[in-house]
Length: 241
Image (cartoon, rainbow, N blue to C red; front, side, top):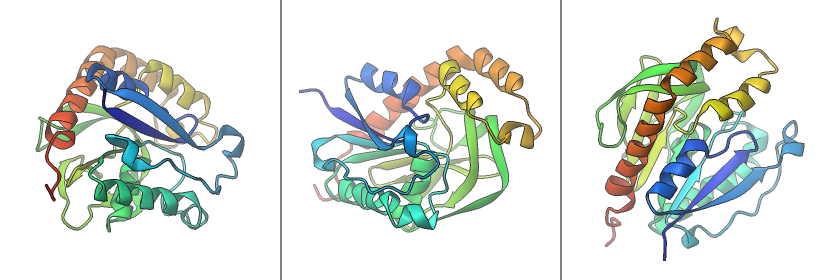
């Protein structure tokens, strides 16, 4: 039986993209679970009944436009999702958090998340202490918040502005967006209603051009990232075994 990864699609525009393809390459069956439906995007404080994490080998919370510390969300699905990842960790299920999902892992396991002094949108060089897990080079960013790593976690990648990855047991949290390809970027740019890209002095065309330029190398690095995650995190024995 093939291993299974469950992507938690916290909002409809933050899909699995290249990550889904990379997990398929590793022999995984991919399942998706929608958290906040598109029609609730402007009113996202919904109650959600999540699947049982024990039915999966990997659970991957993905990105979202909202702060993970928003009080209305913490009273509803964010607290439920945080409990889900804690239950998953207790059951030996591996975790891969992406941007909002990485911040959720930080918050769920005792770290903190707050507004960053400098947002990151676009392609940024990421310094990695573990190239077997986080290949070096530029990774795509779109975030306004940053975490402090939870107790017991090890930060393994960073930019000058923010921590970019940490490992805690069988969990890997990422601040950047490895899933982004040209198609997913276009969906995000079309939704840039508040001018977030222009707000940091960049243009949509700049992001398009750089994403097209890096498409082939980025896809290869995503495959390497997922292969490293499977080898060094998913297939490691549980601490209690």
